[in-house]
Amino acid sequence: MSRDEDQQYAAGAAADGGVDRLVGPEADSEESAVEAALRPKELGEFIGQPKVREQLDLVLKAARQRNGTADHVLLSGAPGLGKTTLSMIIAAEMAAPIRITSGPAIQHAGDLAAILSSLQEGEVLFLDEIHRMSRPAEEMLYMAMEDFRVDVIVGKGPGATAIPLELPPFTLVGATTRAGLLPPPLRDRFGFTAHMEFYEPHELEQVVHRSARLLDVEIDTDGAAEIAGRSRGTPRIANRLLRRVRDYAQVKADGSIDQDIASRALGVYEVDERGLDRLDRAVLTALLKLFGGGPVGLSTLSVAVGEERETVEEVAEPFLVREGLLARTPRGRIATPAAWDHLDMPRPTQNPPHPPGGSGQQGLFGA
Ligand SMILES: Nc1ncnc2c1ncn2[C@@H]1O[C@H](COP(=O)(O)OP(=O)(O)OP(=O)(O)O)[C@@H](O)[C@H]1O
Image 1 (cartoon, rainbow, N blue to C red):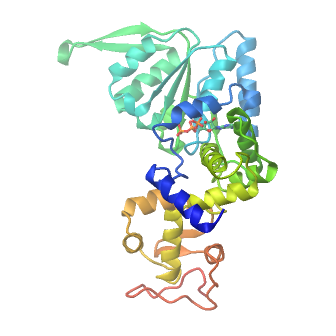
Image 2 (cartoon, rainbow, N blue to C red):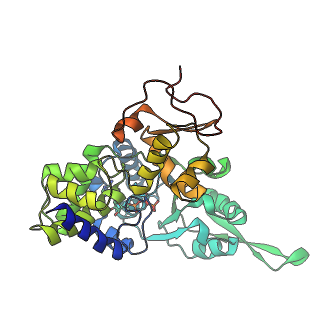
Image 3 (tube, rainbow, N blue to C red):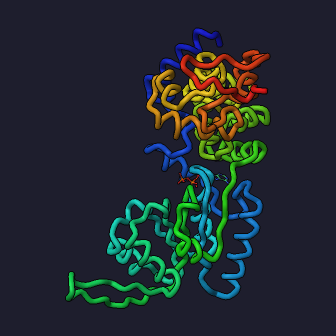
């Protein structure tokens, strides 16, 4: 297909709202049904995270042998790495039902009491974003986790009384993107804590192959590798990119995916070989072209790319930092040598020029 045809395809995709932050790690509102279909259902099907799998397998097997309830589990890690999936696997492996809720949905202790008091014996309670629960709910959870009991407060003021309520044993699976935000008394009440890492490219390749099989799409090894390499270490993004490449293959070719199709399709969606999208590249390009690689302040950089400060800081920068393309320093943002290479720009041979009114200090290329 010609470049013009690809551009027309891109315009059509944009009109569908399809190109907006294709590489964002959070699920978008329409994604949950598709994700449900692609979730591994048992531990043996779960790809990657070998240590977490091995340890969790022991925890669950031991609980089953004792005919007991599994210890409370805390899962931490970036969005889209499989925390929800793993919580469902825990329930399935324990042949237990699962209740799913999230920290922001529990604003009052009463909300939590209602959920806890309706749990069945052995049920798994998945509490996503557990670090965003209200303080009173969090305190109620301490007792529930440790003693399987809550005090329900009836009445207000001096006449208020606490009525103790026994709970059946249950397994709490808490998920958080930042374990460090949890108060230590809460963290300490989990019997098993697992940190989920970003996935290796070969693991994401397996995710892509598995999802392609479930979606009934033909894909070869190089096609899967191409998608995996652009998926930012995140299965959710790998699955999303696969679906977009599938669209392209269906509309523009015979429906099967090879490296050429994958690379053209993701070119249309402006996701480059390393997984950077348009916003990431705009930030990097401004940093290199306008500010000679920095250091430059976040506000200035944001104005230069026409985005909010928060967008640059929270949406673009974390991945650029993780990829070793940008560094945050007390003097401002600086590009690393790898950034010049990635954008195919010659590395400056001496100290980069300083931004107008800049600090006059040296960037990574400094002596
Ligand atoms: N190890 C894995 N193997 C295969 N597919 C996976 C794996 N981990 C995640 N996925 C897929 O990635 C998608 C996102 O996973 P999941 O919803 O579990 O992530 P999460 O960490 O709970 O994200 P969030 O924090 O945003 O809720 C799901 O469709 C799931 O099928």
